[in-house]
Length: 364
Ligand code: CP
Image (cartoon, rainbow, N blue to C red; front, side, top):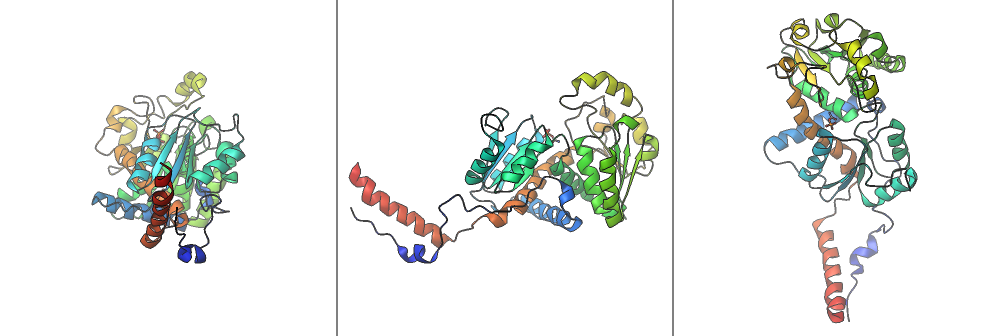
């Protein structure tokens, strides 16, 4: 039984056998408020470069062999499919961990789960019922944590939405000229969209009945964003005034998971004034586009004639979730991967095969 350890490589390489070579202070994507305008523009430009490659059938395998743990406490179509396909097309792998499938704060502490996933995966994605759950995960994780929606915000959706707006920017306008009218409830999607739009220097209007308007705390950070960026934010209960100069009208569900008991009250508050129907859409400029993050309750917050209107861009938005997830995954993971040389790969393969040939063959 003879096998040779080639110290040539081991001698000058420091090989970390404890964990996957993780990082002490990874950058997380929990809230777009944690990012500057320039950083968000970098993510947007990276996404656009990767999308251009994808459209020519040559998405580079920038995350080859990387793994993403995807924790879902809530159902999802777009987020789940886009992250899983994005990892595959970038040469990596995603694990779908559905509600109840792993110990997350039940039978195992958040700390332990975060540490274990950090040892096995290169990043953690989570869609959690409570925002505190994802901030706890991020506090303990040694790999980047990406927020796939909480009860507070939905940052991956908002970055996607701004990319979609850039692709549909009206002739003669630039990003900072855009006016976005969000009609409806102060949802987690509104929170992130208001954050990104005001960071970008855009003009953001939220129209809703007073009880359902963006809370004062959100208005405060949005105003501060505008002070820095030159954008503006306005909260109103008048949807017609909100849409009159809008380049984009956006709406979202009027009630969310856990709010089913409020459906009669919410329906009465929003219907019919805040429904995006052809009458409200007609009050906007002729170039105005309609957006919805989906899923939608057709006939409730928006009617079919608007959802399926030639100026509806809801499916461009959906597709852009895939491209945006690629941009985000590469932005947060790429520099943490080891990118070993072919020579180093060949060295380890040879070393393991030497062992297999010398030891295990004899033992069979
Ligand atoms: N927009 C969005 O997040 O959709 P899913 O809930 O289907 O993921």
